[in-house]
Image (cartoon, rainbow, N blue to C red; front, side, top):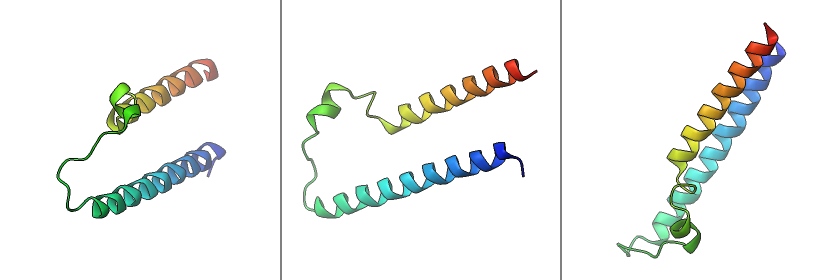
Amino acid sequence: MSQFIVVLIVISAVIVGFALAYTFSIARNQRVLKGEFDSSIDEKVQSHPYIRNPVFLTFFIFVLVVILFIVYYSFKY
């Protein structure tokens, strides 16, 4: 395997590990809040609802990685 593939595998493993740990922490918090239907939203999230949204962060990171690949391949060839 080339170094490029190895680096992508390592980055992917780190992302998957972080996502798994984050999911488990969210699930643990849901068990604690089981009796409550509504809970207060953190002030940081209220002031930045789009920046703290993981879906938007995923789209932003994906677009950034695609742009970096395009720039890399444009300078390579």
